[in-house]
Length: 137
Image (tube, rainbow, N blue to C red; front, side, top):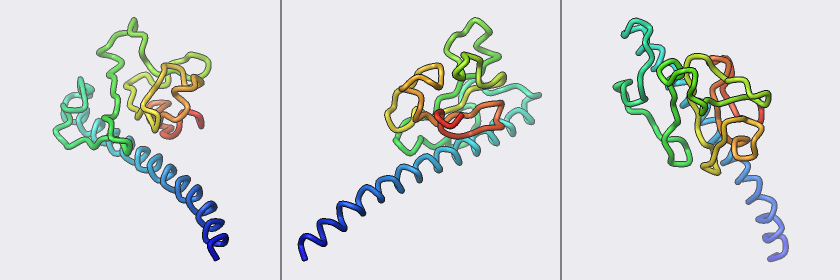
């Protein structure tokens, strides 16, 4: 009986961990979509200007599922010489308006999405046409 219980636990725990990881990624994707909508509302109220930071939105912006704040960069305000924009595997910027992303489970990131530290990041790309894992973009 103990052998059967041990076998069931050894199968169930990894399956549960995968489920929890997927749920956190889905929550982060939803949060980034919601924050993007709030940024759009801010633009409508402010003559198409982007907020300088997420606190300008006048809403309670949640932390990501791993307990860290979402990263936001207003690309136009930072200027074209600012080198920390998120980039795809060809080193092209992901967005032209703003970057919005979560550092993912490992809490680490790097500019290009093909870097090992960025593969678990949840990113907004193509000016909002894509929101998902960095490794899926």
